[in-house]
Length: 116
Image (cartoon, one colour):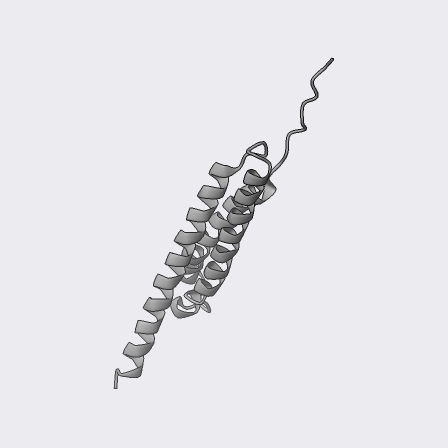
C-alpha cells in the first residue's frame, strides 16, 4: 500500500505582498528623484505620490494577511509565512513613509499660507 502525498500548495498572495510592498516603499523616493530631472515636476507635486504609497502599503498588508491565512488554512504546506511577514512590514514602512511625506507637505502648506 502506497502513501499518497498531498500536492504542494502554493501561496502567491504572500509573494505578491512583497512585490507590492517594495513598490509602495519605492514610490515616494522615485517621485522625489524624478522631480530633480524633470522641470515640470516640482517637489510639491512629487509629494502627492504619498497617496499612492499609502494605498499600495494598505494593499500589501491586505495581501500579507490573506497569505498568512492561506498558510494557516493549509497547515503550513503552502509556505509563505515569512514572505507574508516581510510583505506586512514593507506595507507598514510604506504607510509610515506616506504619513511622513503628508506631514511635510501639510507643514509646507502652513508655512506658505502664513508667509505674508
